[in-house]
Length: 262
Length: 315
Image 1: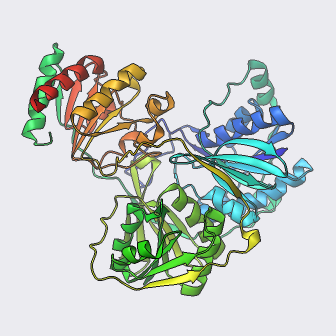
Image 2: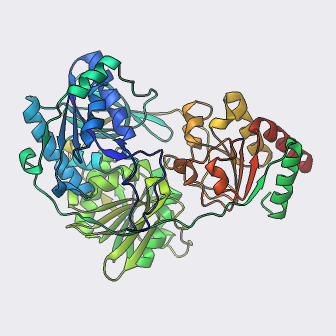
Image 3: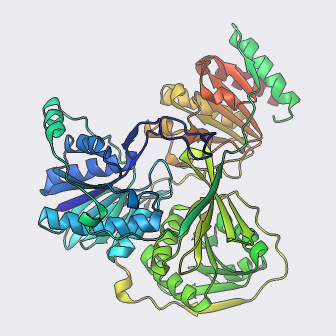
């Protein structure tokens, strides 16, 4: 099985993002860029699938040239190759434009890889915009089966079985290949690289293309951001810090009674 | 403006979160509510909220079939705007249809408002909820959005609007992902969205035994148990209890956060609470920045005493 994993670089989501007062836009420039967590889950799931069933995992990304270092981290944990498209003309793309660029990049990666992909994976959402649209749109654009929030993939007669996490449990879907899945958090964590793999990945060259080299033509955004605000802040209230727990509890309960919320 | 509201159903009934969408839709102009997989009686009941209902009939038990059927409806009705509840299904259907129509799509809208220049302006949270974006949509087809449950209240019921029935013709090749089975693992009813009191626990509860204190406090307060992601991942409680970005967005009168540090991904789901109490032994925990009352202390000492005191009060 030849698998392509689409990866987005996002600001490290352990850091809280606020508006930059000068520009009025999200202040992300000082935050380290990392691989989107759900994309890293997708890679681990793909690598595990290929370890069990054969095949290889390719990574594709669109972003600044500095993305190379985080893509190298993925080569160290099981991806066999990675391709990057870096072009200022593609920045600021909305979900529809990103979908268009990715589907053109899938073609380019197939040409470079020398064989078509059976499965394209995306994280179920990115931790920055959290719009959860691109995977679904990509499947539509490619005209192939789509299953969202997948946590397990296994081979079956005629194609693949995908286990989708749902609010109340799970659903199993059978698809023919090629297919597009989005990946939710499986019940395991991505592996850590061995030192040997890390060293090898550091030396790897990641083919980086301009939009023209990748055969990508630009598309106009359909989503326009008119502006940003921050939600109203809550005021911190009273802090209770007592030596005796019982006293703290009594104080707190008295305050709850006063506020008539008990 | 002409809006289609897709009424998502669960066990043959429209979800509350999708009935709420009739409110912003009606404020924008005319509305058609589209529903599939329910009896004519339930469709009739839905029409009691004032919008005409279009009942789709046919084999519409999976997303692929629903997308095909809704595509057909949209081609016939030419709406300006199509709204979904921001559920797992709504988040799958909206972008797929938007792509088919060359449209823009908004996820997790918390406000959908008419605008002279842009027709509609959408508000949505990004970056885990610390930032709100105002978005406008252009594109060839109608505008698509899914809207967070709790953003609007559902309209009053009154005189019933008409119900129209339409047979959805879904081509055989439209169903690309075959639904083999659906398994329900979580049978408990967890009504976090409607709860008046929520007691939520996080990593600071240490273990499953510790988390039981959260359940006990919820019980004596007549509240519902909530949890942050670490508690879910540790397996102390099912994901039906999760509050935050990847769980439920709640707005109770009283929210008690026990052993929760206050990561934005979690707390953004509870900021609509009227009164927040936080218990945490780390005095620098960011949960204290949003709490009306913050107790600095060990949850394992505080909670048993609190449970005991409230039991006394309850008699």
